[in-house]
Image (cartoon, rainbow, N blue to C red):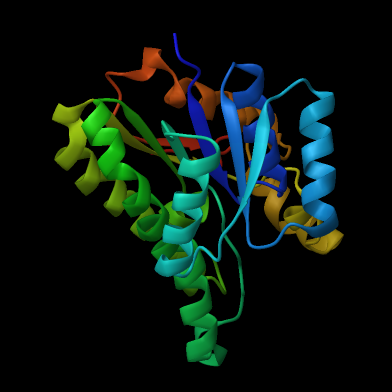
Length: 247
């Protein structure tokens, strides 16, 4: 069987790197996308190499459709057809709505939601033509339940699953599945940047399991959704949040 190729945006972050490692270990050739490479890209590539994973890097400003088009052309030329897209990249800019500026809203929506269109649109037609594809969109528990100071982030993450359901209907008959994964609070650099008092007093008490999730726990689900065995799963939203929000 030809080796499948999985492309992951936000590949250098905690969940993105965990997804790349898990996909690579499962036998995928991995393409890690980031808005710049530099030392971060070199170190990521070295970690992939040391793990025995066949991995490439690609550059894109994912909020720009033109940049994503250029990235897709580059990947096609260097790596070949992409079978799996993991739309993982995201940012936060938390502020109460009364203080939120248009720039706060636009930057988060562009990076978190518009990018899902930009990246997916560049790869979906070849998937349809080959009769196989997996699109895995990373949302958030806060897109399901909301969060104080995150009207921009929650809106962007909620929008992702609406995108998932509609696109899943359009491409199901062509062998392409589209699913959402909605993680809760994970043990990543982004979450660890939250003040310890808030983490211990406000976040952890909301999680029945009493701990942060591990990125590799979410990555294992991503690998399943990327696999042949998930062929009957599409348009679904997988909550993986330690019981923080049950639906």
